[in-house]
Length: 321
Image 1 (tube, rainbow, N blue to C red):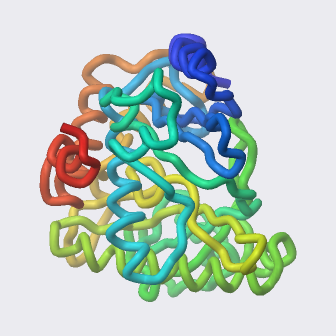
Image 2: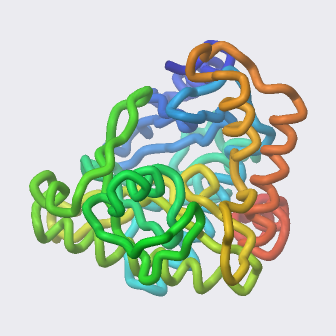
């Protein structure tokens, strides 16, 4: 459930008057149907923040802009080099070509919105792990395995997994925890051909993305991709956000980790949530200090990955003056 204070009611009503139809609300994003284009959808990234599958009654300054910019960076810089198809149709100032007149030439929308093609998203999420941490580490401490994959002995939180492993999960509704599954279980859900495509492409994306950012002082410890299938070609294509601080763990690069390092994401809010017991009381609101620290982490992530500021990315790559 999204707290009332962070619901995008004004945005939804404004878009409705312009002719856009609200489809659904995610933890961070609002999805709209574009009038006259049954094949397209508009995605708006809010500043909402969630931890432990709980949408908090708080926002993080410019978070939606960072998520949108980083997704554009990877979809335009990484995917074409690997021959990977995506759902992206337009971004930045180009979204105006698909929007009603009343919502054109608005920088805030251009900085937060993507025009994408509709897709039936696969029921399994594609998770790639290059370091042992999070739920994977919890599984390992109990069984010595992660999603049925046997790992070596003596690994700790933060240990390198080389080569990286593909560990799918279920895709649950908002408010419910995704469940780690084996590759064999994924095959039963989506079919062998699709599962193999998703596994191969996800591992390629993860490996190449790490190669791109390692020289900038960043390691991608793990990440989550979402895929859909083209009904005509039966080939998969990439959807949703990609390699952002919401879908990935970005760590400062170093040869070895004796423990998990501070990450460039919402870790300050996660730490706060554990301290205050947010799972028992979802109504608690993070302090200004915690939210500002989190905003700084998001901005640092794009600065390191892109090599320049969020504002420069928006100007140079998105055509927003």
